[in-house]
Image (cartoon, rainbow over all chains, first blue to last red; front, side, top):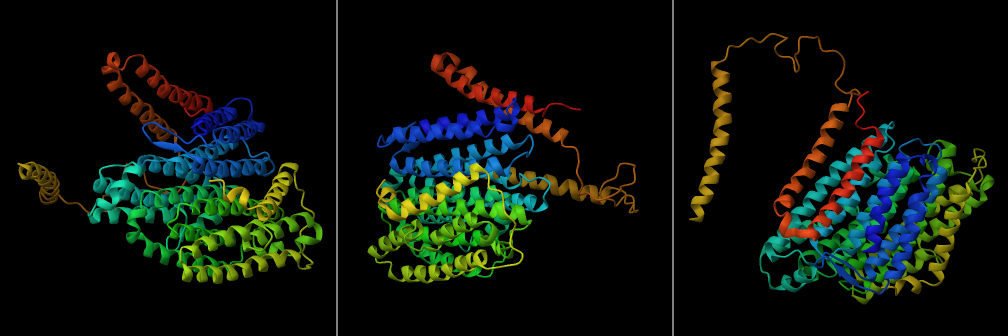
Length: 456
Length: 119
């Protein structure tokens, strides 16, 4: 609860930092504030208190996922010190919106009432609609914001309708009560409600066939905002998805299990197969994020509360790798004027540091030991096999082999010799710190995955 | 009993639809018809229309209107609180302050940001 309140206050403080004299260093307000929030999360660990008539419950699950989203925001803000240099007056508003969006992420990982879930989804989404269009002069940014807003609000509507139907069937919005009453309810209203909530979530995590918005929105939005959507929005959506479906809707498993099975397979294949044909880094990362959502969906299918640790590990390693790749991509596309894969050709020649970071991050995404990506995939597959999900694990393994192909293909670009190799790219100290932190994080989680796996 | 209540809603529905239908048909039938180019234009105010509709326009009115709605809604929340002021006591007062505080901060923000400046 401290984390939630403190983050909201930091959001307001950030807005005011932009209005009052701090235009050029307003980033320090959210940055230092969020470090403070991390401390409160550590202090609140193992407390497990519920607030306001069981509206939110800050158990370790909630704290751990809040911690990941806040850490990701700290990384993104640190990169932005270099990236948004001299961006003008509205920069503090962008930071403020990011912080407010993370408030939504905290609500989404701590809710224990469906009303709070919906409020969390909206607090998370509305700032991101604005952020997607934050590059006002660029048509693609406007297009991305409009697309995301139209599709996103439609999905929110479906989610809300689903919640209403669940309420109609069970007469309660409380997760524990729904879990208790669910099996006694015979009404098809509950089944339809659960399926509508499911579709709302599948949209937010961009699972096939609800994924068509993602590549366009990711491509059009400003680079840092895309990194924000790929990491924080996705992690928060999964935190809420798993929290809801592993507790309240477990008893409705017969309604959604087969649907989700098919969607998991479709997401794994659609994400990885389409990524093969991408020529732009941002679109490639968009499809790869769809594919990663597919792996995390495996954990939902286990119907096992213990799978939360595996999702947490996956979200952490995916966040680290994604932020590193996005940071490198931002630097290269800024220097080269485009994010097309061909522009990465010969990156190693003049920028060995960036090339090595890119290599480690992409290896981690592809799931090559001893990096974090390998063990997070391994634990997901292991826990799925334990639940007798044999066939879907085979699909996932095939998908990850396809995935390795395009990660290594885009990586080989960076290590090829080329006459048009990018010039030496200046990497600012903040970005350098983030890149090194991501690499070290990927290595540590690869060597000691149990650090995160058994947190919750 | 239940059915009668729903019947009233249904009747209301019919009246609403019927009113629209009847007025539209009647004006269509009774009104004189002049179909010149000028009459068939989308937007007619005496000045020749020029250019495309997709161009930047001043959002001053829009901004003022949306800010008005924001603070208007805030006042709606104050009525029930004011009516139950005595019953809610000190705790209710503090809660209202917690609600009003961030809203006033928001007001300060838009003021400092220059959203209320007309020029």
